[in-house]
Image 1: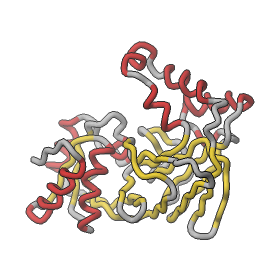
Image 2: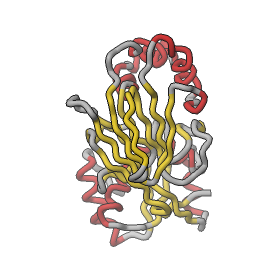
Image 3: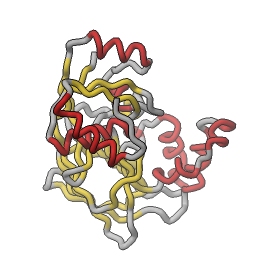
Length: 257
């Protein structure tokens, strides 16, 4: 068993353990999986991993049909001999993206929601906070380069990059191609409040004309302003723009149904 109170120490301990073990079992959510995969990436290790989902969203586990009940997940690890290769993305050649990378206005909303508000108001509190952000001058000109050929500069209010076409087990993109899914919420005004609320309620980004969608294996993102734009990777604060992201197909050896 490996325990640690810091990500950096956990990565070091996992790296030390890898040569001595045949499988690595990760207990946690997307953030914990990210820490473990960071260690594997540093070693370029393809050791088989199993997951016991214990996070808040468990997007990675849900997408790969891994049971979210601990006993069922343990039974799968102990009794299954099926190992599948699955893809991940990597930011700036060193930081894995297991599930998602996001930046922009919406990444700040969850930080503003208090636990007591969630308990009392439920999901409606996110809609309220989201509407409060409409009209704030928090959109930025950002240049995107997809697969080193398609270049677009967009006034970005929120950008979401994912390694799957679903978030929290909910499919939000109809594309089934391999690679990175990119959804860019264009500058939101009062006139677009209805499609924005629809997005907040359903997560169906493809239904809104306010959203630009792309898919690619390589993405370069640069800010055209002097304002620092920070990202969140798998739910945790991470690097700031500019960033380069590439997709590693069939990189992770995963025990899954």
